[in-house]
Length: 464
Image 1 (cartoon, rainbow, N blue to C red):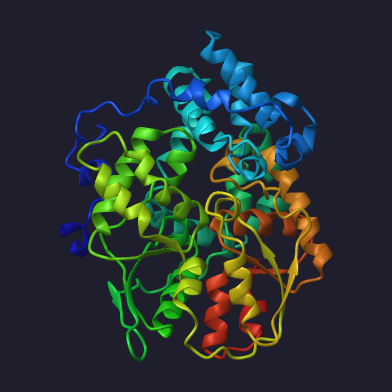
Image 2: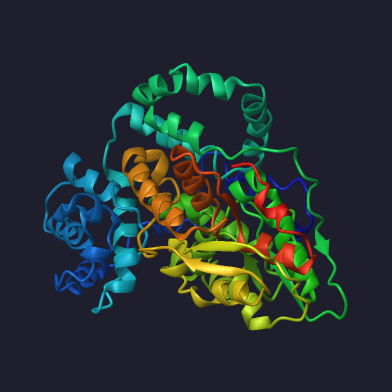
């Protein structure tokens, strides 16, 4: 199992699977298209009842039928019936966050998640985007799924934040100028989290404390690994303190979530194959980023038509768990020390809607003595992060971020807890625009602080 032990495993999944740098690896089987008849069958499940409307973030913002799941399904049906993918039609598909709140709300069991995924794959394959938009999207997908490229960006970005250039950029009005020239680049500047000194790389194995109860693999991710390394370190410590040997394969890379949810299916499959290979030696895989866990649980469907990988993908999907999901299954063993802090818990869409993980993080937080959990109003409405959405649809994302930030402020909490790096960056930015200094932490960091007996200031005195 070379991917588990090779510290120099390539950042490019195509290379990891033996294909050329520009090739899509695999068996040669065309697995890009949906199964024959699948799209019309799934479309026919919708009875246009409208239960999805109040749960859809873009419909809540604008009240526009074509920017609701029901409206987008109508457009999909038009396309199936022969209408071309026009620019206005594609715009309505692009405005969808893919948050899956409508899937949770639908009484008919409509697989809107699968519908928008297949539709976006067709858009990526068949719709010619304007040059600037195409270049922007390509730049994003050539950067964010690659940890080594993100790591190379850390140094210059940290210098930009620490030398006063960021403050100058904002006070001089240059950021406003950048927003007019490239809203996506401006969004990247605003969303970038404050960066401290790089943490030491996690070892390939973290030993359980006390009697070993389980051996688990741990996904380190891309943005999580390079911009939020403290979350991964806290995750490994919590698992070890609960009696788990933690295996952290060096050969792992991006899980493919960003590509999958943007319709770049063949790219997502390449990332998926590499992830499957990296984790085949473990019985359980623990994931601490909602979007990543959601994507990995979809591998069985993503690679179902690839004979060489279908069974292996199905096995990985079956053993993937969100961190909080797994800790509740395992049961607590380590002592929880008091942590007198009031937190607001944010439901990440790909955790609550895609994975159905809602009660577990709340149960873990409730098990910490002296910690108080407060609920945020309209928890099912997305914060606007949605993978790359806040980069490609920054205005809509900012509106949703402002709504979520107002909900957080209304709780009166001292600390926001979020289980996804994109959500953390998105809500942090929205709070900062409102002049709020609420700190943001991951569920793993809260548990880590309690298990190690840290004081509340270790969480509250954090840069935002």
